Amino acid sequence: MTGIQLSKTLLAAAFAACLASAQPSQAVVPEDQRTQWFEDARFGIFIHWGGYSVISRDEWAREMFHVPQAEYDTYALRLNPVHYDPVAWVKLAKNAGARYMVITSKHHEGFSMFRTQIGRASCRERV
Image (cartoon, rainbow, N blue to C red; front, side):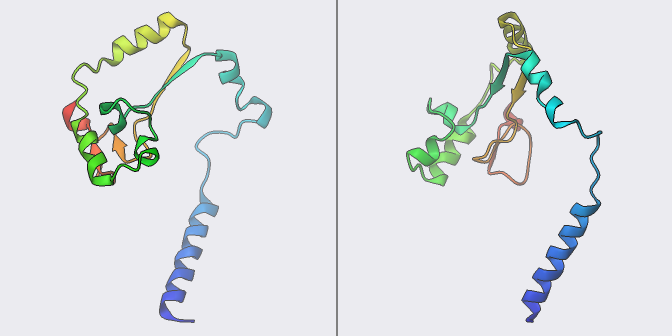
């Protein structure tokens, strides 16, 4: 076994040990009850926004239209939600009858609603 293979094996073993020792933060809910709350709530709102919002496209625009990453990053950096008003969003959702809201704070294409060193773009400095 080479040094690289040994390193990979040890890393995999350490990762598996960490997973094996992980404990849930809450009691495990029986399978038949896991989605009951959502079924009872019936209506909720999921909010996605990212660089594609600037060009009035959907969340898979970069992939579907083969937009180069460098170009797409400029869209994400231009996203400046100056009229971002979460309180108004909640009021609107409640008035529409929504029982819950979920906002995508870190999107698959790298856009983030919070400051991060992992993604390529964040609007946190502009909100």
